[in-house]
Image (cartoon, rainbow, N blue to C red; front, side, top):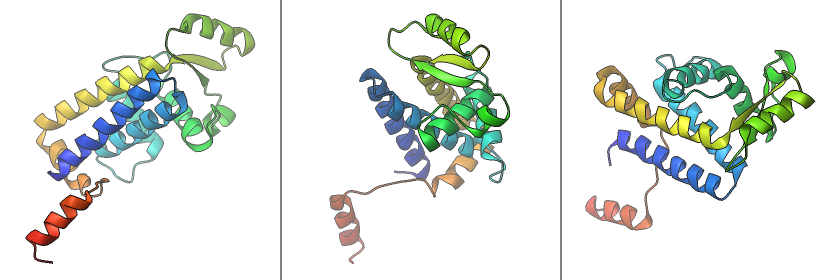
Length: 186
């Protein structure tokens, strides 16, 4: 398996498990997978590996996710939501506390996002935005597909992915390790 295909495989695994999590209403694990997937994709996409995580995350959301499916919140609000969910399992972050960025409230399944937003507007006017987990997942999945499709056509991005793929998580089964050792007479 080429090093770049390890990247694709990792994303396919996380997309599959995020989808299963959403179907089973395991929302927190789905959100963690989606937000960490955006983090990883933004790392792959950025030319400057020293760029701030928030800058590359926001840039990737605007470029790839919002070019396919726009959500009711800004990329900065998504980044704030990511910080809350990934670091504390909450909707709070430094951005919601210090910069008046709206907190994200999630709906899923057949729940009515319009009713959720109306509820938020009554209880927390201008402080919260309703977001469908299903829509977030769809925007992420479509954005990711467009990103990888573009990477196959754009040599500089393909080379960048190849160079960064060396550090990507990979695994090998015990049987494959044994075959490798035998073939190398170890």
